[in-house]
Image (cartoon, rainbow, N blue to C red; front, side, top):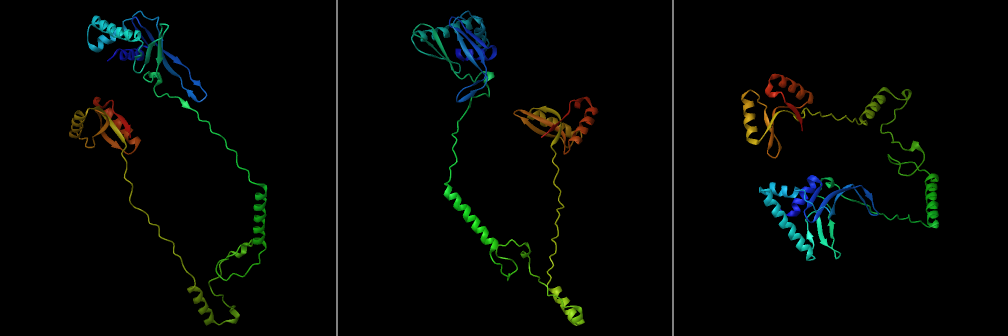
Length: 309
């Protein structure tokens, strides 16, 4: 780790990092702002104060814990790093501080600090500027008045032709021309009309009845096919009794099966950790009832709980 890494850690933990003989870096919080082309969310930035040169021992203590050395050795190492930065600044070179920013000495002698985006600070996690894009409004194109009037005249002429066209007797089952008469849309009768009873014999009546019966087409309603297969139940409510590593979880599950809990199984939870379910249920209430019964069975299951996928 370099000096800039220790300064970054100090800013995250304490909002302040004092570099002896050089200056102090302090976290500053700014409110949201609306600019011309974007909206800046509330965020934190880092400011530099060259007057904070008196050491508070924080950086040396962090170096001591990280490298497991004495405080005196850590302070000596810190001074060597600071001397390297000061020599680079005296030579007119910029000092790169990684994610924090850069330091550079100006001609008048003061040190200028140029911060970066500061996304490593916890207050800035997940926050980014929202850019606004202006859309140019296009006016609808106006059609010439003459063209609009000609379309209106054509529509009126077409409607007049449909309204006053002479009707013809249909020769087929359907009418194939436009009309406003609702009684035209009918089918022709398929059955042969029966003569009056006083002008036909019994034999003619029977033959006519048979002919009319033969001309009727019976459409049988399709038989509904009902499926007898039932959807399998989904056991998504698990009664959890422990959460262990993979090897311990398998042993614990085998021990539960030896005790008579045949439905016990292991559910992967996250890297290096597995949950042991003593049973699974399709209904939430079933799982809750089983949890209450299991808690009363013994102290080893007093913390059993229900997990839903």
